[in-house]
Amino acid sequence: SERIGPVLSPRFARFESLRDAPAAALLRESLLQTTSRPQAWPSWAQHNGIDPRSLRYGQGFEHLYYLLEAAVAGLGIAIAPEPLVIDDLKAGRLAAPWGFSETPAQLALWVPRRAADGRARQLAQWLKNELKRSEDPIRI
Image 1 (cartoon, helix red, strand yellow):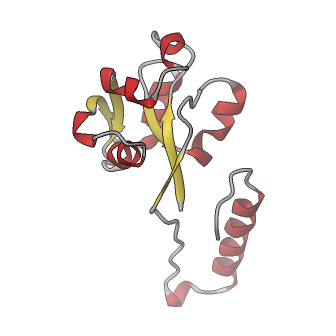
Image 2 (cartoon, one colour):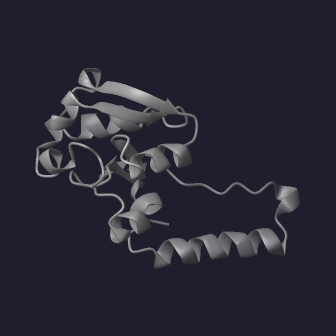
């Protein structure tokens, strides 16, 4: 499963008032979103007892990377998978005041049968090893 959660920069204008606020405070904010993960905010909201229809969306981005860069720049509140923001959290570039929630999303590596040679197996093993080394407990 995947863990996602809202993240924002300490540079965000209302960071101080939001960092200790309940998750419902997000209903007053325009939330950054990405077209590649349209269900991220609704899934998180539902998991946290918030009616997804109450969310207000702001600027959208085509790629998750752009969304995260906008959040780091202080342009708003984004939602992201925990492993993708862990370095920014540790460095203080982002904060996750409301934590992360489990989602039913799955990670998968699909290798066509004709490509199932030694290199594909090596890649699969490397990915498994990297996920196991991660501080975030990811089930393999």
